[in-house]
Length: 344
Image (cartoon, rainbow, N blue to C red; front, side):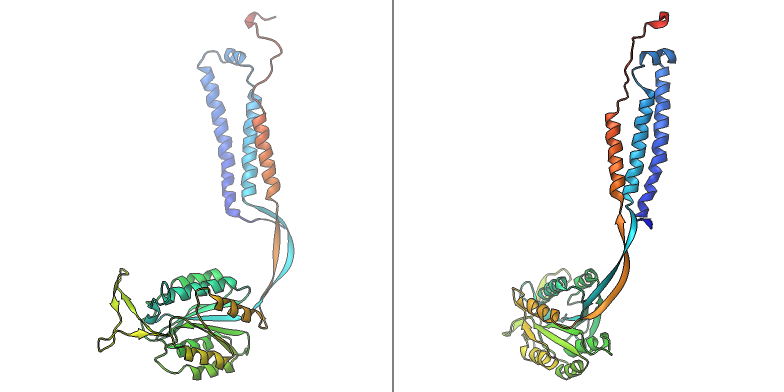
């Protein structure tokens, strides 16, 4: 079976007739230019060391070289090999807190940017696992559905910010429920939820919903981000200039702190583990190590045809023709000098 991997480059084959026309026009114009000097036969006698046939051959070699270069650029492929591709892994959802408290700067540059960096680093480690992203604050929604396209997942991650969801709050229970709805219900394993938040759920107790998630085979790893001492939440205008700190109804500065107890309960209830985000991101190594040791399921299996490239041969021919053209001189040897019209 034969095909071109990049058929769009075959449009460049129009260069071949264009070059042919160009060389034909060039030879014709050269002949007209010689005729301006006087009698064409006499001029040709005077310039008989220049071989017109060799000039035509040199032009033909250039045209053929361009032809083979274009064909090589289109990447011809021949033959097939059937190969079975299998991907095994887990279904992994990463729930990221995008509430206003994630703007706190107790972790540089701030909590949400640190969390996004950790998620991107974790995605880079996955091999064969499907990954999805859930964003949540007062509400939760699927930012990126489960996919094997890690590049797409990271692209969706780039758009995550604290302005993403207008509903304020930190509804961890909403994120867990959204994860339950996103996983395949009939499966009782191969499901992992990584929850990254500061843990301050002011809506309702997420531990009860964690029990339902555990019944459906969802293992939850929680990553706490922030400090337990509490820090103010900076506010910014549309230009990114800090305008102050968030205050309550009494005008007091609101302090946000990491609620480790809640996150530990969620992890314990689901059979997962709790980690606090660290500068060295050692928690990612531990989570990835745990996930890699889990029993894997077959996520994708397909047969595909692998075509063998053959452009090397055409490229070699094109290079040979160009070398041959450069070595071929348009001059020829004359056995005897011309003595004019009185030659006998």
